[in-house]
Image 1 (cartoon, rainbow, N blue to C red):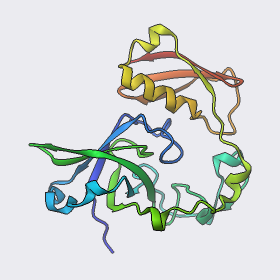
Image 2 (spheres, rainbow, N blue to C red):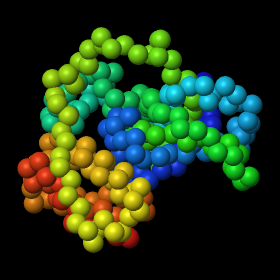
Image 3 (cartoon, rainbow, N blue to C red):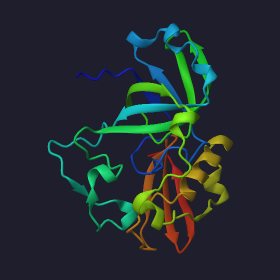
Length: 225
């Protein structure tokens, strides 16, 4: 079966580092789903506005490998314990496909790109290809009693975020609020605990450098590359 790219996502996540580990964690970041010219057909979106959430089927376009391995090392387990690839959401899979649930905020019609979808809570990097969009159905897709496997035994790591005023002034109010939420989720791999290490990633067109000591994350610099 040939997969066709129907759309690409546009947002502030311009590097892999810093993208939320799962969808729905950072709803402050607004993403745009821009359809490819062939699929800019308004009728294809008829009825979509009646749904609150959507499923996106997409591709890990920067994580391709020629061969696949039956086990991977999830960062949540410290990067040392191996689990079966089908028991994880690792990008290194036989088919590098991702599945995310996002909140539909609305649509905007543009003369150049047709109908564009506005969504929040995406865990897709800017430019990620999207292969399909399906509505989220609460009656079928929500399972409150479901178990979370090995993830149930590992609490999410969150940190207190401190952004000094000179650095905060480099971003708009909206981007600053979104960055705070991204950083609060602690984007570091779980096995990295060095308080002297400086981390850096791209967000909203700016390079963000930070350090984490204990449970406090301090932004050191926000500026152009």
